Length: 411
Image (cartoon, rainbow, N blue to C red):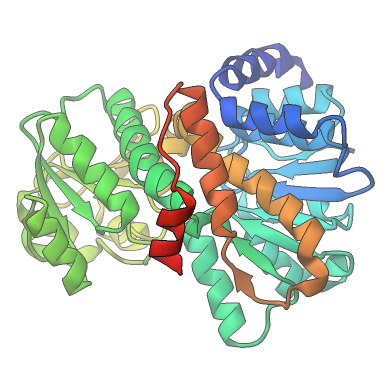
């Protein structure tokens, strides 16, 4: 029995799903290739990915290819209730609603896993956490899974290092077609789109601080510069800091940046990036947003302790008034800004990432007997297949190596 807010929201959810599927040509190519085979027949799949329209379309394709699919969210504020309702109307089991409490969120994860899946699709590592630390009994049938995001892969590698991982996991996030496009172009565009829509403020001319210069940070910095911001990058990695400098951005430490920033966007995957000592020197009206997976990058406990008043100053914007009268504004409770305060990555970007997810599921079905309980990269040929299908959808032709060239390059 599904757990959602309101089935009557389904028509709006279906409208959103119908819109995005027209802009996901690679998934559509793969679906049409596989539909006659029904390669997922008899298999159970549990998905924990930000529950919005693109995720729903992937779930429906997995269902159309034969799988029994249970769906839950991967962040309490990114679930869209109308999408959950639309999937229930389509016959899928859904356990998610917007604004779930921590206990409700965990309950939803467990309910989605109670189908005892063969394969999991995770985003951030919460399904893996439940299966390893809360309900290991639900992992008995799992032959493997696929992880969508940097934070989740990091958590997987910690388990692998401890020899504690129970089944093989494909690090979909580490595929070139994923992190080069989703993390860079997707995060860059969707984070700033959400920020602008939520605040109705100008980016141009402002000091915009990007904390972290991985692929996501590169995307945010690049898009912010394109909108006319003066971009300042903070880093702990000297090589990435040097790269940001060579890319033309100002680079400094976080405390110096805190004094001059108008907008702060964290993209590190680490906790306490901005905390009390930073809040003490930030400008009145400074805006703080997080584009990392978990809401730990901005230390809200320390900000709350400093504030004399906390109030909603605009939908999805919380104002923290400090003793000296300064107001610091936090977007979407410090959660993933592009989804908690926006619509997520553009459909054309998620098309690539979710095509990789589908291929990862098929790869696990084919190869699971050969795979140890470790973290694996998706084979390069599958990565390239997605890129080639995307080029095909754009009517772009590229060259192919001749046999002589292959011999010259590879022997």
